[in-house]
Length: 175
Image (cartoon, rainbow, N blue to C red; front, side, top):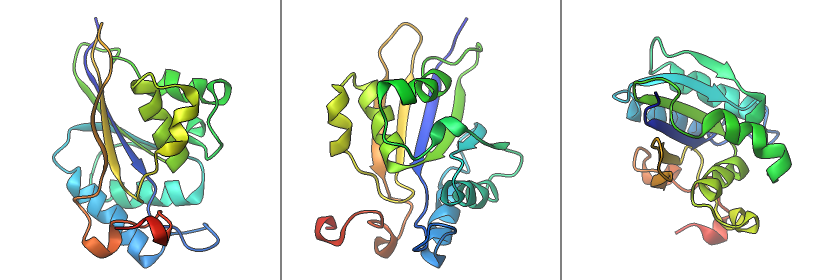
């Protein structure tokens, strides 16, 4: 028997220039994301292997005591293709394997967030490039047994103050 999988997806927080850490604003973004998710019954947090994703996950997890955190090589920062993203899609999508609803958070990169959305919407492979996410923008996809996935929200930044909402976008694209 399977149940509904609630896949919460967030782009990593705002990284410093060499991407080895987070800016002060990035640390604040990650903390606020953790506070936002405090009432969600998360079973796990998975994150990409690069420092900006791992550090974001650590700040989020500090707000969610007891939720296990683990790296996932599938959440890398490579340009997605059907071949190199197959493991990511296989691991994190589809109905939950247990009989109880399952909530999990993945912290990854803009390319991978877009690929998850493209996959859920069954959009052509070349359509993911048109989607960009803000740092700590939150996306939710629900996977029901025997049904098509449902995109519930994309790139929601309501947990952030205005000055932190559009990091990750070029200045000319910020509202």
